[in-house]
Image 1 (cartoon, helix red, strand yellow):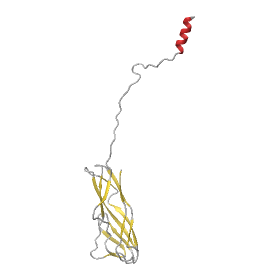
Image 2 (tube, one colour):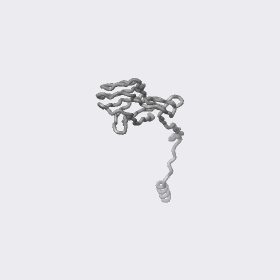
Image 3 (cartoon, rainbow, N blue to C red):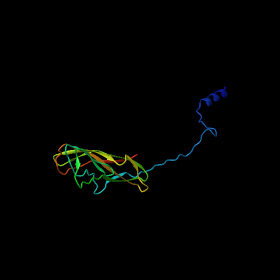
Image 4 (cartoon, rainbow, N blue to C red):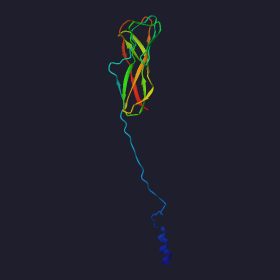
Length: 164
């Protein structure tokens, strides 16, 4: 009778699981991280989107390409000696990294009168060179009202770059 009792107790005690050789294995993984240089945008000193000098007439537009070429539509006429220029920006950041470029429209004012403009960037995206440098230009289209008041008009717009 003692033998049966001891055997029954042995069957009810917990036993730690022991894996047989080959039932488990461990390997070491690898982790990596890359810190990217921040992208920086700077407006080039002395640069400006210049729509030039013109007569408004019955109105129209002044167009400046991102390459700096100017043209007019409607009744707008350039005056002799008018100079059109595209604006320019410099980009710096992580070498060989691609980025997007955008620019908002804006307005120019002489203090009492306003004209609005849209912008056009030289490229919607680009890639920084091996030194982490890049650049782009901005042209635009200025809407001129009929008999727009004479005067010097100034204004601003925003340009933005972001890594892809």
